[in-house]
Image (cartoon, rainbow over all chains, first blue to last red; front, side, top):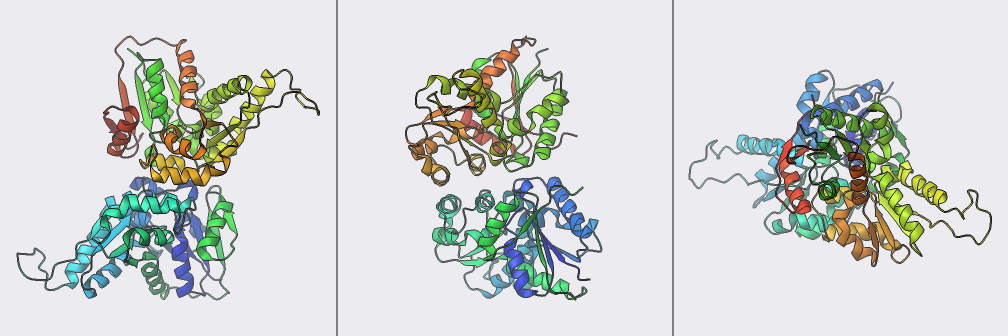
Length: 282
Length: 282
C-alpha cells in the first residue's frame, strides 16, 4: 500500500509547499496537517513548538507516513534537530536549511546581491538561517578567509534580518495578496529597506501569500521562496523511499476550523478541497 | 501579609482591566499574567483554553492570590464555569458576564439602542454573551412575554454579533490607536455596520486599544468597555475578602517576551513598568 508524505504547518501557509510538492512529486499521496488551533507559531517558545511537532509527527506515523515535511519556517528553525533525534528512522525535510542553501547559491552567482530574510520572531531569534547562510557562503567562497583581514577580496553579501510577527496571522485571517491590511503591515515592517535590498527570502511559508503587498512596498525585488527549495529537497529524499503504487490521494486536516481552512486553501491552491477537523490526537 | 489579586489575559489586553482595577481598588496589590507565548486565545478550542486558565490560576495560588480576574473575553466565554468548579474556594471574576449585565442595563434605559458585540471567534461561537444579554433583557422587561406573541409590546433591542479575529493580534503587535493596520482591519470587519448600530461592546480586552480605529470606521458610537463593568464586579467581590494591610505592589509577568510586553504596557498604562518572564510553571 502507498505510504503518504506528511506535511505540516501552523496553518494554511504550508500549502505553498504542498503545491510545489505536488508539482515535483505528482504521484505521491500526501497528508497535510494545519495546526490552526495553535497558530501562530511565530511567538512561541522552542519547547512548545517541539511538543507540537512531536504530536503531529506521531499523528502522521499512525497514518503510516513515510516522510515528514516541516512546511513551517518556525518549526524548521526551532524543532528540526530535536524531531530528527526523536524519530531517527523517519526522513524529515525542513524549509529553512534548503532555503539557506539556495540563498548561498544565488549569493555566489549574483552580482550586487543584497538579501533580507523576513521571518517570524522565533525564526529570527533562532539565528539558524543566518548561521547556515554565513557558513555556506564561507565554505563555498574560497577567496574569503574565515577571519577576513582588510583586503580587496570579495565580501560576503551581508544578510539583513527582519522579524514580521504580524504577517502569518494576517495571511491566516485571509488578508492575502495585495489586501490593504497586508500592504500597511508590509509598509510598517519593510518600508525602510526599499532600495537597500534586492532579494527577499520568504522565511515563513505564509509569506508567498503576501507577495503583491511585499512587491508594492519593496519595489523591484527577487523573491526567494523556500517552498521550491524544500520541495526539491523532499524530491531528493523521496528517491530512497518506496515509490507510490496506487493513484495519489491528498488528505487535508486541521486542528482548527475546517471551513475556514478550506476557504483559504481554495484561494491558495486554486481548487476546492475538503478538510477534516482533527479535534484531538488522543 | 497582603494577598494580591491575580489578573490574567492572553497578552497585554487585560491591562485595560488592570487599569480600571487600580482606579477602583487603589490599595490592592496585583499580580498580572500575560500569556503572550500562547496568544492569541481567540481561535483556540475550549479544552486548550481551560488548561491555560488552570495553569495560570495555579501559578497565582502559589503567590497566595486571594481572587482571580479573568481579564480576557475568550477565557471568560469558554473557561469560567470550569475554573469556578475546579477552584471552588477562590473568587473568580470574568469580563463577559458583567459586560452583558451592563449592556442589559443600557438596553433598558436607552431609546433606539442598537448594539453590536465584537469579539474573538471563540467568544462569538460560545454564544455566552448573547444568551446572557437576551435572558437579562427578558427578565427585566416585564412587558416582553417569554414567548412573544405578535403585539405592540416593546421589542428586545436586537444584538448584532461580529467576530474580528485579527483585532487582538493586531493590538498585540503594537498596531494600536488609529494605526493604519488597525483602521483597515476595522474597515474590513465593520464598515457595513456603520449607521446600523450605535453601541459597540468591546468583547475582548484588547479592543479598547483600537478605539480610534473603531470610531473612524463606525462614526458616532457608544463604547461599552467590559473593563469598567469587570472592575466594578471585582470591587464588589473584594468587599468579602481580607483587605490589604501593606502598601500596594504590582507585579507584571509574561510567558512571552518581557521587553515587548513592557513596551506595549507603557503605551497602555502611560507609565514605565518592569515585566518578569515566567518561562515555565513547573
